[in-house]
Image 1 (cartoon, rainbow, N blue to C red):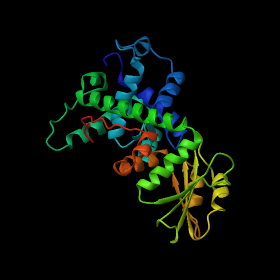
Image 2 (image 1 turned 180 degrees about the horizontal axis):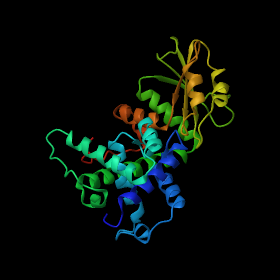
Image 3 (image 1 turned 60 degrees about the vertical axis):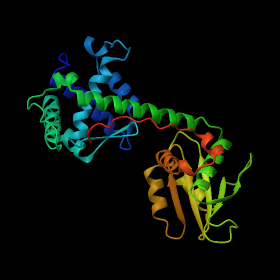
Image 4 (image 1 turned 135 degrees about the horizontal axis):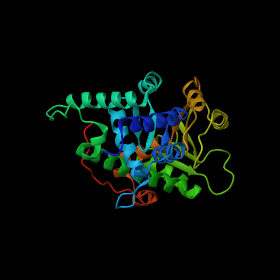
Amino acid sequence: MSDVSRRRTGELLRKLFSILLKNPDGLQAGKALSQLADAVTLTAHEAGEYEEGSRRFEKIVRFATVDCVKAGWLIKNKGTWSVTEAGASAYKKLTDPEEFAREASKLYRAWKRGQPDKPTSPSDLGLEEIEAAEQKSATITFEQAGEQAWNEVEQYLRNMNPMEFQHLVAGLLKAMGYHVSWVSPPGKDGGIDVIAHTDPLGTQQPRIKVQVKRVGHRVDSDGLKLFVVMVNEADVGLYVSTGGFTRDAEDFARNQERRRVTLIDLERLLDLWVEHLPRMDDTTRRRMPLTPIYFLTPED
């Protein structure tokens, strides 16, 4: 990317970090890039498009963030970007954009040299030459494919009929070896959507009470407390939320001494689904049909 100077790269990275630092729980890559584009004035080169129609700006930033990931400054997980403590420290310390970008590039090269049985990168590989770096191209392709897959699954679940979502969770519990005795019918459910047991007759403790929420926002501690009061000491409570949970809700669940409550966000739900997919019946599989597609994984 010969038309992008190191200083300009640093300016974009630092502005990106300032946006992410305002979102300590992370921000979806698409939203982060959109907010970044709105916060800066794009050059003609950055605003231009590649032949496939994608804007050059997004690729420039994605390539630059590869250095930040390998430097330990940035984490990318299922399409969500977040700044690490080391990244926040670097942002505070390295206020000059060019110095910020140079240090990220330096740490990337140090990481690269530490990879076993791999050729050493040229010592002066600059960000202006990043377009020719095959490894980074593979990383970006892999990253975008993962983001697209995750976003589609997320949208699919959040648009699912509430009753269908309850049965999806119930089917997952069955695949995990639990015995589902009740799934709430349409109408008021009193806050409990699924009841399951560890034995077929439901005579053994604990009884598992489940609430499922197909929402786009994080459930806070107040919302969680309404569920916890329905969980007896001999029960286990499972709260499934597609929107995840606030930190105070997580703290509240973790600090329960007499009631056991497990929180399951969208990421954990998907991980459990993939893990137990081989043991699901056909009806349950069809509720969220997934097909594995294999990519060559870029170097870690």
